Length: 257
Image (cartoon, rainbow, N blue to C red; front, side, top):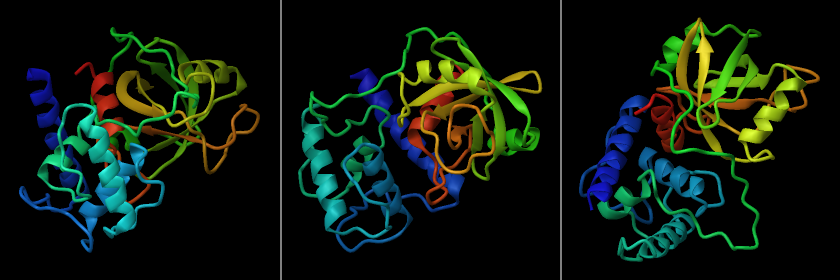
């Protein structure tokens, strides 16, 4: 019961922090979002539903049938965890609370589907300090090499900072780094997010890495096409410039909190 209460409080804290970070007004405490509603909050709901696998479409900021169906699927799935949500396709305070929990239930994946999973551990092998993205960004130099340490395994690899406005875009320094990257990511590219620390100016900074290379590619012959995203405290996603709940959770883990 205590863990459930802590998780619920953390969900609201993360949601409030995400609104503050983006400059949007916080959601009304008793507001019920439903068909016809539009705005930033609908985009956030859609992003979270997509992260959890219930919505397979880009966020539009408009609450329509596809969003309502995704909410119903989440509400049904939540009943498997004893949350007892009404399956009505509307996002009221209770649904919103469970939707933004760190442990929010993902869509059920058939047993036949392969799910990659990197190595983890109850005891972190590395931690760093929290540092705001604005400060981190000012300390990073494009083209420079930095050392990333995976918090679960303690394994390290070299990366090159190649840019990024709302979060860091990193690439492997050379092909020798690929083996460690693939190991911590479960042997293949995927959407897993890992707590890591990045050494910048001799300091270990808490961060979160996603195992999916994409987009621009500035480093040749490193065994990887594209770059991968690394989030720091205060980083925002490339979609709607919104905070990412899972990255934020990893960053706190990487900070030992």
